[in-house]
Amino acid sequence: MNKPIPYGRQSITAEDIAAVVETLQSDFLTQGPKPGEFEKLFAAYIGSKYAVTVANGTGALHLASLAYQLSPGEKIITSPITFSASANCARYCGAEVLFADIDKDSYTIDLNRVEDLFKKDKKIKGVVPVDLAGYPVNLEQLKTITDKYGAWILEDACHAPGGYFTDSKGAKQNCGNGRFAEQAVFSFHPVKHIACGEGGMITTNDEKIYKRLLRLRTHGLTRDPLEMQENHGGWYMELTELGYNYRLPDMLASLGISQLKKADAGLKRRKEIAAKYDIGLKNAGVRTPQYDAGHAFHLYVVQSDKRKELYDYLRTKNIFTQVHYIPVHLMPYYRQFGFKKGDFPAAESYYERCLSLPMYPTLTEEEQNYVIESIQSFKLNI
Image 1 (tube, rainbow, N blue to C red):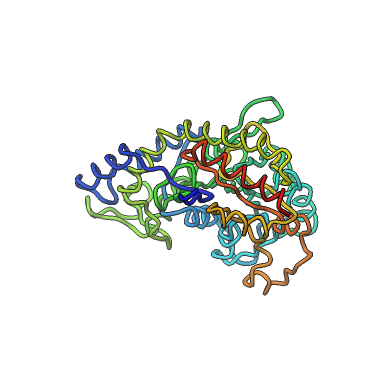
Image 2: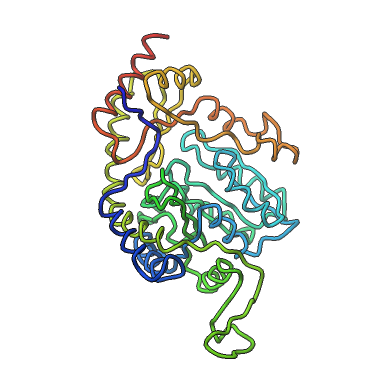
């Protein structure tokens, strides 16, 4: 096939372009009405009370950590199989990072290992579970652990808008709905379900956290008379704490609003692609993912004993797969804290074998057939 097939790709329609152009021709390119509109629509989609737009998913993790008042000397737990920002958010606050190994089937954080860490260390203040590839962590089970130790949960749902798990009462719990995790974060990077170019969102049901996030996002400033010590007039504002400039421009928010309208259709298509991979790769020499109905399929991750050879072979076929992720604890930055190879065997074994196949709503039947046939042909040629 002449056309390259990447592992992920944004889909920008004429409606998306028209939405952005309309904003470009309006009075506001930033600090206008579009971020607020996006927040209300996204909160309704997820099922949370509040949503706060930010510049990107990393900024969302940072601000959410600050909203929990994470500070030096304290610790958080996260998975070693994630993008480094899930851990870095604690380091931005001067806190320490502990890792818990992953479950061998879901590839998400192993809750038994999480509890083991809590039993050993009283300085742990929170857990950052990652809905890896779109597989939702069972936050109800995690909350039974964190409640024992007075800790919070910050759900990294960047891969999972539209995903859900089923709780002990048989109810669907949407990723980011705030029922079990006091805060959740999402990313609007181009390969995610909703593309803004760059962008992120924090969802919460806690009004106090919500108001603090609004201040932290905009330098720590407030114009709310109830929060100010003085009021000199309509122009007046007060710096209440040290904040950041993590605002999402109206241009990008307008794209997010347009993309959100297609979120359900995109998720449906992702699940169709996953189902076809399940069948087509059944005897192709790779392990297909284990998952429940609530999987959001940002990624479709297979495992192969000859991952490097398969990766290179597919590239010769113009198929550009990816590896998600290099274990965070093996990155040079985190090795300086004493982490080393062998610390988390399940995560390291996963890394040696994992490969993310093309997964995006505009992947055609012809392209997917070609990917499947290429993997099957690799098996025959080794």
